[in-house]
Image (spheres, rainbow, N blue to C red):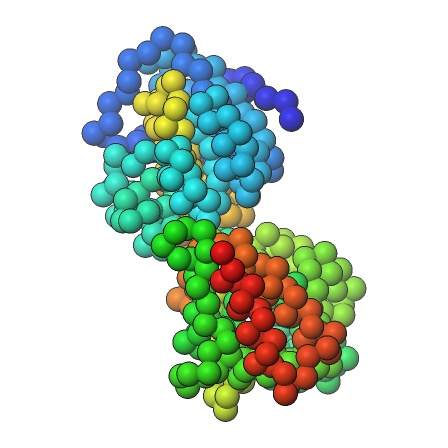
Length: 413
């Protein structure tokens, strides 16, 4: 991919759109003095879809500090999910400022790619606590929180479901089946499958080595056993109102009318609203029947962060630019232009954000979510287990054996 040089133009032209959000530029903290410099060359990595947004943000940064330095700021599209791999290929010559998914933070810190954030107290005060946690290692802040929307929740069509219906996954399946419709969820990914185990007392997570996992999903102790969860999943898989499908299948189903509810994320909010119109609804995840009780479905949560390369030749300016990209005004702008949920408390509490059904649902689900801190061996064993459930190759008499096999793979060194 080619580097794209941002041509700095008068800020007036950049702020006509969404001027209500950008009527004043929010500078970084007063305590941080603009560093003295001549020509400042910086490279910024961000999602390809964020090019227009980042161009406007960078232009306004340049306008703010035009009397302090001449700028050469280049933008290069780089997937946030693969940012660490790209950076580690040549850390000393990588981007000065980069957006990345929070599950890469430990690796970046261990590699010495990030330094602690100097404005830690202010950033902690102004951002959601879970977002701050996502940007921290051992209680030290290493990146600027940017978004708080990489999670999942329930989409539902109000033409079919009442507010009472959406409280129970089992009831939703019954409603869908009665209409010859489906409720969807993706079981090919452990990211979603976690929702059944997360609030049961059965645990999974990353060991202190930062590589291997611990997992008790096969436990026979406690009020809920691993087999109880697996039996519930088998009942759901066999229900005529259920379908396991990926993002593409979910979108196809809502557009052709076969799917009337589904567990998914904010990235599909526009498509869902277009398909369902006035019927468009979103809510926290429902509960599901397990071991004779109703268990609130859990979720993994994820956050986007902005980091500064510890090897940047313009580290002070890179810090100022990173803080600028993640400030309150620009998080509001990010929501308006890209529909991404803010991590900044004030931005998240704004009328515009709160009026978004998807973002509001995600914030409500955050009470039942936790950070994804999982080693690489988690994904394949979970997918194999759920595939066996979906294709009917597991029977209830062998559930413990299959759970043991899955957990053995998850905790493998």
